[in-house]
Amino acid sequence: MIDVIVVGGGPTGLMLAAELRLQSVRVLVLEKDAEPTKVVRSLGLHVRSIEVLDQRGLLDRFLALGKRYPVGGFFAGITKPATVRLDTAHGYALGIPQPLTDRLLAEHAAETGAEIRRGGALVGLSQDEGAVTAELADGTRLRSRYLVGCDGGRSTVRKLLGVGFPGEPSRVDTLIGELEVTAPPETVTAVVAEVRRTQLRFGVGPLGDGVFRVVVPAAGVAEDRSAPPTLDEVSRQLQVVAGTDFGAHSPRWLSRFGDATRLAERYRVGRVLLAGDAAHIHPPTGGQGLNLGIQDAFNLGWKLAAEVAGWAPEGLLDSYHTERHPVAADVLENTRAQMELMAVEPGPRAVRRLLTELMDFEEVHRHLIEKIIAIGIRYDFGPGHDLLGRRLRDVRLKEGRLYEMTRGGRGLLLDRTGRLSVTGWADRVDHVTDLGDLGDPNDVGDTGAPTDSGDRLDFPAVLLRPDGHVAWVGEDQTELTGQLPRWFGAPTR
Image (cartoon, rainbow, N blue to C red; front, top):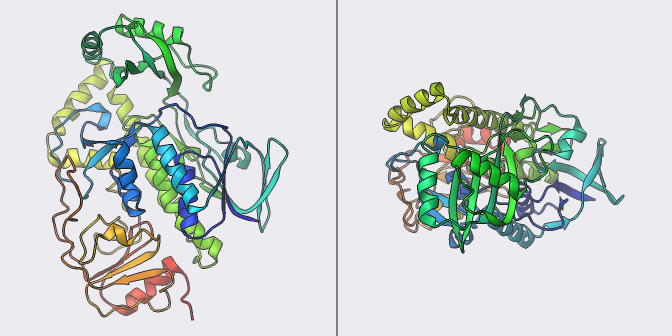
């Protein structure tokens, strides 16, 4: 029997598969498409996702193929200088098209030993006390201990489960694609600058080799959302919005997206769970969707692996919903707000001008940026130290960096006192006592924006979960021994 079937071979599913394999869980990824998509729905990675990649030793692969950009201009496209100080050693956005992200995560998942099966569409699903049965379109039946639906906004898994997906349907459609144009680049630049003075959902930008990425509002909401637009449809809308189609021809691919906003009522039903777009959909404003899915997988992977391994404490797997559902709800709220701020009516434009002024205050600017880049998230672990529930930024230790210490996907006790112990949990938690000054990592390059990572962290000891979030802060062994079972189960004899 397979331990976990992951339905969907996009970034969320591939990240989850690799996280499970890190804990020796037997994983099968089922992807209905026979070939990887060429559609570029996401253009990059935000800070928390970049940190996640660093925590697993993957960041160098992505940096080699991407481009760093200063952190700014994300919230509703309001451009501000990248002067806000951020609590991270990676204060930049990484521009990298989604097909490259998919490829790198697929390579990583395969390297860890995950099986990826393409062309296998899920059509049926049932579960009992001990396992899940997955039925494929070709009649194949597979049994697994758990199944996770990472199969996108039209999730078959979610529908088969009957999980409610409340929210709002799309009010507007946007056409998107990559194609060639005959207009001179300077003409394209001038027209785009003029149109974007009022229409912020419009854009035409060069990708190289004469190819341009086109984003243009559609005439209405399509009945069949899965049907790509035609070149004629894109050309007509360019004429309507910009007064020219720029001589558009030879499309590489064309697609459409809407602004539907929905959140699954539950992330878990028995032995079946939901992650990524299968659990939440929202407008792409701010580029949060792919990042949110990767971070879902990072939260879920170690918890599900603990359940499979048999050491998970009661409630650990359910904490995936408890922690990630509110995060998604907040993303839905901020994308709703951003869409309103990008509307062309006088009221939203007036609010946008006011918010633009307010963002000159660093506290306001930082607050809005942290919503997008996801480093301000604090899970509710109860009252305690300000670090409790937050992820810890990368810092320099006496030997190496913090994030280098987390690559095995285990818990970690950073102990300045030298008096504490994880005896009984040493098979799940590492213990480091020689910390150094916990300053800015030496080998983090130019971030493109200021950070607060030079500030020294002040704590006697912290216990980190495998996802890097702080589970306990203190110096008392009795308190620590009381917290270890909450996250790492019963001690071994």
